[in-house]
Image (cartoon, rainbow, N blue to C red; front, side, top):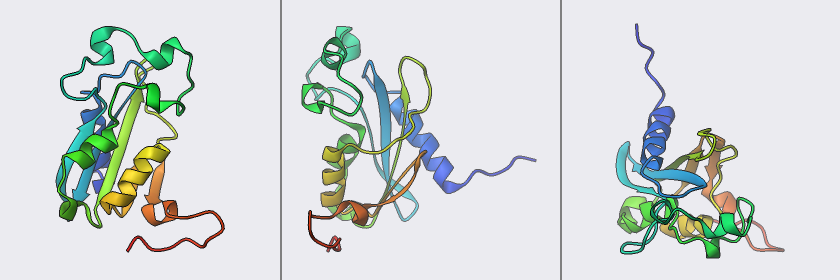
Length: 157
């Protein structure tokens, strides 16, 4: 008898499959936006339309400069998976939706832990109206990312 996987694992597996389209030489992520148990949009890491991907060029500026993971994204020629998923969705489909993110390290093939959106992607997720983010590392309530120094956390609305 086959054991049925949870919905979270189902969507995380789809996000991981999306990540396999990624073009980064370091780490590839996939993101899907789900609302009312329906996939609204998907995204993966890749250069903007019309620009060459790192995997096609065979080089990565951040690797060449030995930039650690999570730093200096302005040097990266790719658009993040979260951004691509948001760009491909209508705003009303993202309000109160859940984003699932999963990805792997290109060199090792291992799932990336911790798997948390960068600060830039967090800002886009907040503005898109997405309610929660689920990754292999856990569940994130997007409202916890909305804060200002010296002030209490406040609602997205």
